[in-house]
Length: 92
Image (cartoon, rainbow, N blue to C red; front, side, top):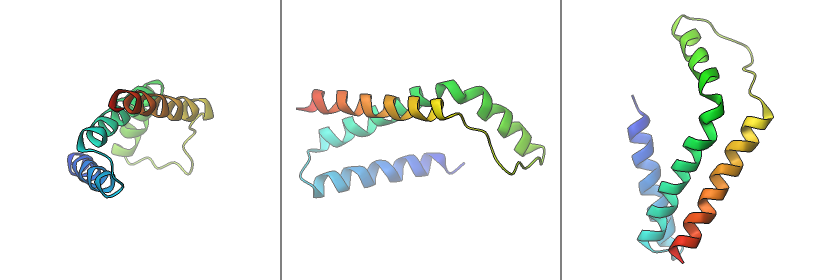
């Protein structure tokens, strides 16, 4: 329920930080949008695992540790960084 507010707050924060550091508004909005696209692509391999965990949490099951494969984390980081580089190239 708070996800839209978090997204909006992070977007405003990114724009304000970017303007403070001397980046244009277009560059910051493009970077934020491409970062979110990269995050969406990067989380794609783990979608089924997240769905199972969400259903377990709704049923009251709490795990001590959630197994998150390192390869999924690497894929997520690479996709976010790759799309941020694309955004940087597009705004230069």
